[in-house]
Image 1 (cartoon, helix red, strand yellow):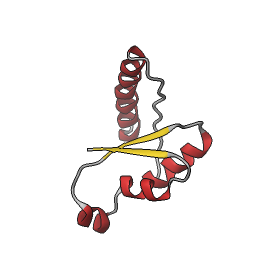
Image 2 (cartoon, rainbow, N blue to C red):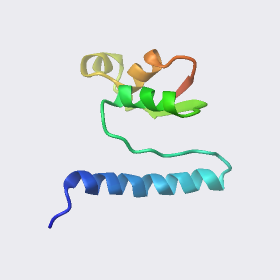
Image 3 (cartoon, helix red, strand yellow):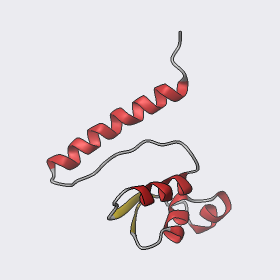
Length: 91
């Protein structure tokens, strides 16, 4: 039986993130990669409440403020809804 696409995508992402965790470890940076499904902003902020997080690091596509406002932006949402935690947005 074929593996459901969700399981395949999740497995690929977990493999990718495992390599990034190892790279961080080699450089003395503590990190934990977690794969979850759901609305990105809400899921990130829920996770922050569960874990002892020092910093949220997010990527941005750099499409500009207008597109972010019209289409919605995970980075914009997290920056404006995160309370008592620093957020670093990397282009």
